Image (tube, one colour):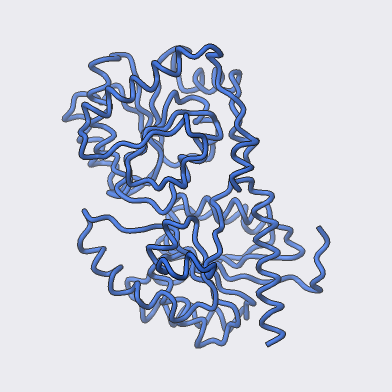
Length: 386
């Protein structure tokens, strides 16, 4: 599409601490697929970030600026303000959920005309201290942005409220993916399994996400320990990095399942790993959407998720099932095996191409990046008219 706007729009994207999570993946997916003659990103990341793809960002014309973490919010705001005054972006787009009030306050003081608060998550009743901070900040979520965005209606209602969500005040921007990369390939599955020294017919369960309380990998290990009683040769592949790695390794050891659990760390080949899995365990304690569930469905992979994963993550009905964490690990393991057995008894016995279904649900990254560019252009033009 040829833009009617005459110059490149500059967007300061507030990322927080980059650690290889789903929010970063979504933002980077959009960044890769933008027409950079129309829109360019300036990434503002916390100085303690673990995974910043500097070479890729700069190769696409983007720039990276580092700031102090929001934990020192006064210094964080001052540094954001200094950057805004230096680069003079047309838009500041913050992906910090309730914490967006800090950089967006700085952006308002710096007279940035378009300021977007983006909600990607919700809250977890099992994290009372974090919830106190979130509950204090949430009432101010709409104080500094000029526009609101969210990855799902669920995430939108949590941060911005039901009224604003239902009256169209919030733009839903899907955590879109490059669908073709996730389409199932038997040859790729076999090659990747060979690379990981996994047997062609060995049962493999995947668990993907930052190693954190939210993603609940402790429970995933409990479920897998129960599954091993029924399928002794099964493997659990835990993908992601984070602060709980040692705790999870110790827990696996205490369960006696260490030899059946592989910690693969942060990966750049996730689309290939989904081919390796036979099912995805997704027992999150809370989610704004659940990007890994979308990616798994694009690979025609069964997903056993907690009831804390919103229904908006269910695109292919026969692939996703939700169970309460309170049902217990033994129930989860038996249900997971039933799900796998039902699938293997289907006539086709082959994974399907789900490209059309995923695209129809709004998760095609090329379409989403184009829509995002158009939205940015409209916002900038509207501010000029005013």
